[in-house]
Length: 343
Image (cartoon, rainbow, N blue to C red; front, side, top):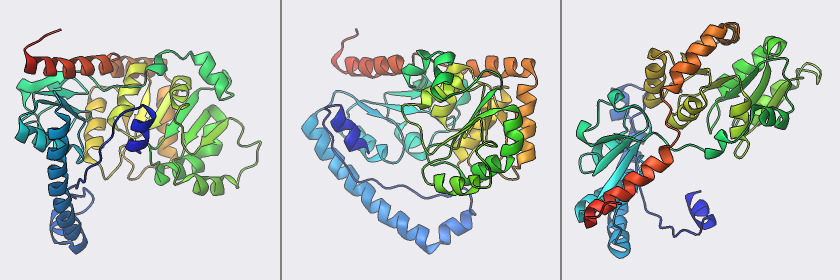
C-alpha cells in the first residue's frame, strides 16, 4: 500500500524486510513462550529483522539523509537501528499513550521523541526527549460544515446522528450488537455504520431481516476514505475503537464519544482508560457488550446536554490541531542541529 501512495505523490520508495515479536495479549505468557507456531514465526521474523537492518544500512549510506523520521511499529525498528549505527539523527513519533516495543527501543538513541498526547501521560519513554506535537490528522475535517456533512449522507435534523465504526478492519462483535439493536436505535437516532470491508457481507445478510421502511435513517458502508471526515463532522456521537488517530480526530472535533477498545490490543485499552479517567470518553469493554448496554450508554449521552458538554470539553483538552506542522518543524530543526543551523 505504501509503495502506491508514494508513487502517487512522486516520491522515491525503497522497501525493506521487517519482522515483529509476537506477544499476544489474549493468551498466557507461558503459552506464548511454548506455542510452536508462535516460536517459529518469531524465529523467522528475527531473520527478517537482520535482513531489514542490512538493507537499511545500504539505503541510508546511498541516500545520505540529514534526518530520519520513524513513525513506530516493527517496520521502523531496522531503519532506526541502522540510523543509530551510522549516527544519523532521527525523530520518533509515538501516537499511543503506551509506547510499542519498537519505539521504546528506538527512543534510547533518538534525537527527539514526539508524542501524540500531553507528555505527563507517558511513563515508558525518556522524559528529557519528549516533545508534545500531537498526531497529524486530516486537515479537511476543519473545513466541513455540519450542514454539508449531513446533506452528503441524506441526514435530517430531527434525530441525533450516531457514527459507528470498528476501525480499519471493522469489528464483527460490534457489528452484531449494532444490527441486533437496530430497531431500538432507529427509534431515536440516525446511524452511519462503517462495518469494515471484511464484515460487510455478514452485516448485509443480517439486514435481510429488516424491511426498507424499518431501515430508514440507517446508512451502512464497508469503508469510508474520502468521506470519513464528513461522517465525523455529521455525527453527534461517535462509537469507535480506541486507536490513537481516531481519538486525535475526535478530540480536534470535540465529539462526545463511546470507545470500545479492541480486547487484544493493550495500547487501545490504555488509550481508552486514560481518556475515560479524564472524563473525555465513555469507555465500554467489548467483553459482555450487549444491545441493552450500548443503548444505555448512548442514551446517557444524548439525553443529557450536560453530559454532552462535559465530554466535549474534556476530550478537547487532548486536541492538537496543528500537529502536522509542529512535527514537520521538529524534524527540520533536528536536521538543522546537525548542520549548526536554526531557521
